[in-house]
Image 1 (spheres, rainbow, N blue to C red):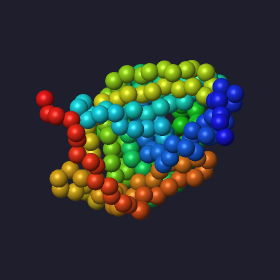
Image 2: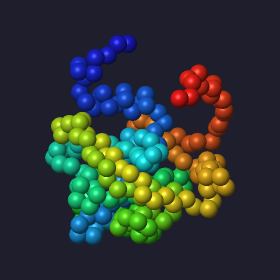
Image 3: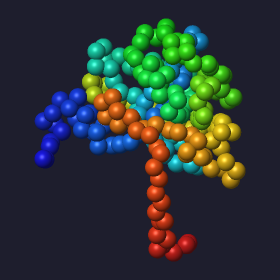
Image 4: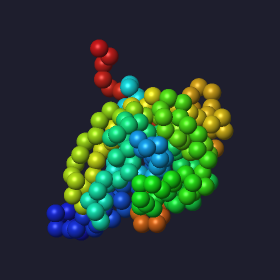
Length: 209
């Protein structure tokens, strides 16, 4: 089957993309409005960029209904700060509750019955039960499109990392088995990380300068 994405509605293109780009890690992003209202929402278009400086990105889609920007994006634009909370399997149900599109005055921490702790460097609450947190300062936002199906790339610099002792190992390793991360698939489906295999990368063939 050969498909020209221009021939499909963006919802159909999204289904094909989200069914192919799997599994996707979940950035459970907490922010705080200038009025002090916490916000918490999951985003699965999320990845690392580089480690010097430590940089990550996630993508915020444009709402179909009103074409308005999501509270996460509004808060980051106004404050320049946010926290990426990582989702372990025990937190899956709570994460799903916070995926609901809700008015700006809704506190998703309270709705999902999550304990909040303030960040160490940024003035944003984090999910206390999450095993890993990346506190971020905004680097830049790249707007791809403000139309339905469009979105914004939020690029942030990690200014503080927190790892629960249950997942951190000496030598700066994360114990994936203890972490129990979940991945986003398509539709209502998620995946577990509980089966591993290893491949040794071939050595570089480039000469050192």
